[in-house]
Amino acid sequence: MFCLVFPCFSYELSRIDSAVSSPNNANQKLLNLVFVEISPVSQRPNSIDITAFLKKLKATSPFDEFADTTAAWQIKLSGDDALIFFKTNEEFPYLSVGRDFLDSLAAKIKQPFKLVVFDNTKAVKCAEISSIEKTSIIILGKSVYSEDEEALRSFLHELGHSLGLRDEGVNSYACAPGPPNCAPTKEDAVKWWGLLVKGSGEINYFSGCCGNMKYICPTAQSLMNNINASSSYGLVNESYLRDVLSHYCNKD
Image (cartoon, rainbow, N blue to C red):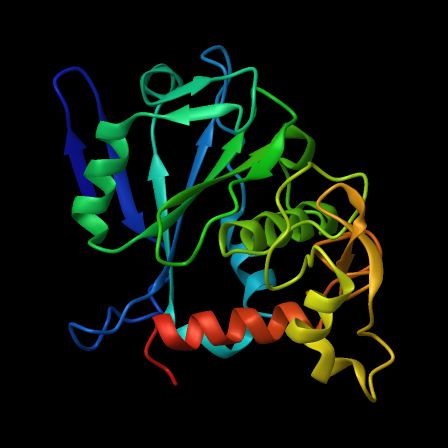
């Protein structure tokens, strides 16, 4: 456990997945997930059962193949300190994190990480479209501030964004189309996942993703589309995630 001390405040950072070893060589990297809860000063944190989210992750393809290269961390801090580290915004991504705070975490973890924030001050859930090589933020607002199935799937959905997946829906937040799962044209879709369409009843060319009916996505239902109707990412997204995890964690 690390206690990081600043001029007026401190917080604790600890590993919570003792079964997962540290990198066994200097070149191996881990998918690092750092969990933290923030609540109004008048409230105590709700003590989220983070193990439920990790269990769901490690039971979902393709993350079930990378349990030994996934590391989980937990930050404990008071409501007063949360006001120092985190500031709310009215626009996306609705929460800003202090640079000194992120830099101090990076100094201890020594690798990029995904900061998973359970925010009990708002109902927003969102994540930046990022990549496994970059540190980025996942926000799970109080509407999913629990360990029920919807909350667990919301976590997987937002994690998908943080690893490069786009929304597969016309009513989703508007964003630029791009690989692997939101093609601007049918021609692009054929290039990206055409080989998976033949012989599969799941993969095809469906209208609508990234908030635009003209864009094309590979599945009618997936975790990147409707979390209430699907518990999987779909073959195209699974293939993409497997590739980036394998390459990043040196498991090719």
